[in-house]
Image (cartoon, rainbow, N blue to C red; front, top):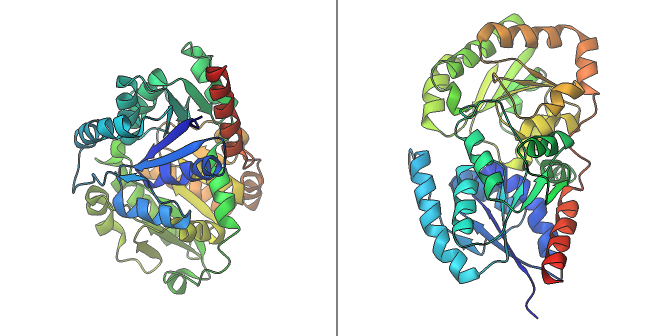
Length: 374
């Protein structure tokens, strides 16, 4: 009898990191057939993750283009996934999170009446436009899905408020699985090039790229980083700057000439985990880092006005500081100046899981197929 086929579809670096443990678990399962389709919404950054986790896609759509819009990505994924689904005939399609790849792949699957499983289901902000387009993407995916892998009870509750109670499993976040996998394999890495410039300083690890910050927010963040290194001479900034040209054009000129600010190309995931281990504080507008850093006892300041990851704030390991220069500087100053506050944040328990999320997802999928075949 043919084994149930599960197709894992993703296209960005963050989704590849978070889906890698799920792919590993499915590929190790003798009773399931796992197929991997990548869209390459992020080409180079995706390839780095695939190499680290030793994942070879069965299908690579390679659809990234220069300065692509969300409309471009949506249309290409929808059109190119349709014949792939017809050929592979999966019994379940897994998508992740809130990307345009995930939303369009879920829609293509829905059109062909293939069940969808949403890894990292149930994250919400109060505003459909923040973050844009991610908030809309994840809400659409949840409306199209049959299985919902909620990372926390808070995400499960958000689904329940929308009437989604069947097929929901609380699993923890797979990014913790991925982080622990890489953490145990990076002792061999040499010192990175930026270490010569920043070694000996307290390192502020920064990521910033959100679309809703493209007007003034990114410039405000850059000004805040510059003020912090000027106020704290024992502190430096490591900023793996996003490849999006808008981010580079708005932030680069404000930061590139300071001796204690290192603007580097995006780090592969092993190098990024290494950088987190050597850092003192994270300032980010990204999602996954809010979940990863607490596992390494690293406090996080989230440079956004709202976050869908409120569990870290409630636990005390994360603070929401907005995108205004004064707010970012004030919060960072407090943590950098007060060892007690720093220690409280660094030792708060990570609410995002224990590294077993992929196995819990595998168990839920087996249960789903067992019920379907009964």
